[in-house]
Length: 214
Image (tube, rainbow, N blue to C red; front, side, top):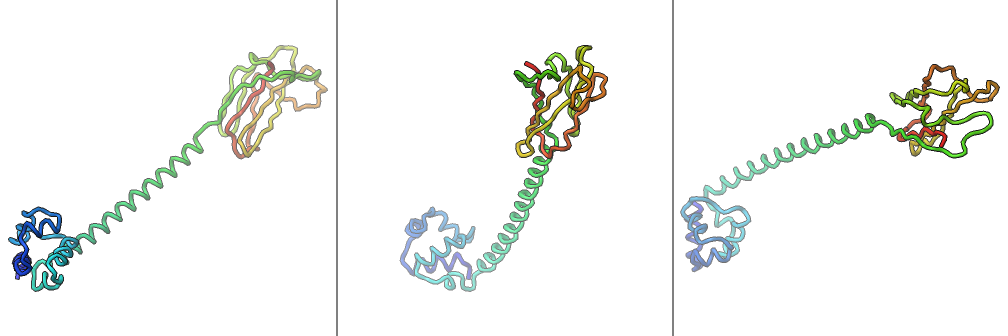
């Protein structure tokens, strides 16, 4: 027997009208009518509520009903769809994770350290002096190799630099000095208005402060 006919029969046996059953199930009266004429079927949760409202078992409602096979087919289809949705969701999540990691790596490796000029007071000694700000013409950085282009007075025959910093914070300090005294016990560089500073000793470089005489 068709489910709609079984539902109508059990409803009549319980002495309940379509309108009364609709109120119990919180659906419209037309929904009850559509079920009984076989136009469509209730979902599994509503089916349980119908069973309770009519005081009959699910077996009685679905006995020899074509709805049983339809529900089985529908359940299988829902399971397949859910599996596909989970597969798509996993793919989207995995793709987003890969994009996030790649973006993080890209910005980590592509971000250039900040270079700032820092004025320092009382930095000179009798032997050496820091560069003046106007002495420094250009600073470039590539692959932890910093190039400084400068001009210094003719009375300063020698130049050199001192670099220190913190690997933990990624801060680097660079002193560029000049002197006319060849006996100064500092590193002196042969130059042609340009020196290169190797920063490979630092594992992380986020900010470089180039100190000059205030």
